[in-house]
Image 1 (cartoon, rainbow, N blue to C red):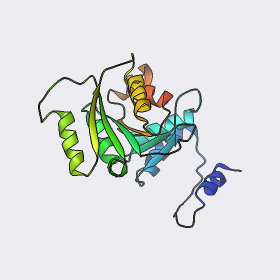
Image 2 (image 1 turned 135 degrees about the vertical axis):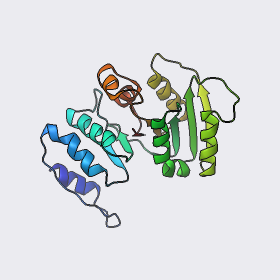
Image 3 (image 1 turned 30 degrees about the vertical axis):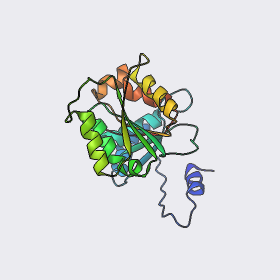
Length: 209
C-alpha cells in the first residue's frame, strides 16, 4: 500500500472530514512545504524525529518546517502508540515565552485532563505571588484547568531525563513544553533539552517555538 492509502485506512471514518494529498518532494523541499501547508491547520502531528527506534532525515526536516514556519502547535508522537493521551499531562515550565506559547496552545488538552502538573526543575525559591509559577497557576485556574505546581530537584545530568522520570512517576501520558529556548543553531548542533527530549520521549510531546 502507498503512504496515502495507509493514511486513508486510518482516517476512514464517515464522521470525520479528512482531505488527503500525496506530495512527492525532494529532501530540500520538505521543510518549506510542510511549513507552508501546516500553517492552515490547528494541530500538526509528526513522528519522533530522532532516536534509534524512529527518526529520519525527512522527519527532522518536517519538524523544523512545522516549528519554525508556523504558529501551530506540533504533537510529536513516539514510535509505539500510548494506550491513552491527555488524561495526565506534565507541563514543563521554565518561564520562557516558548513554554508559554506551548501552554496556550495546549489549553484544550489541559482543560479536559484529569490531572495536570506544572513541573519546574530547580526553580528559584520565592514566595512572591507574582513569580512565574504562581502567575501561571492563576492563569490556568481562570481557564478551568485543574493543575498543581510541582517544583522538583534535578535528579539527572540532563533536564530532559529529570522530566521523563517525573512523567513516569506521575503516570503521565502527555508532555507539554516549549521548543528551542536557546538558539536554533546551538540546539541543532550541540544538543539541548528539545533534542534530548525528542530523542528518547516515550510519550506524545506537544510543543511550539
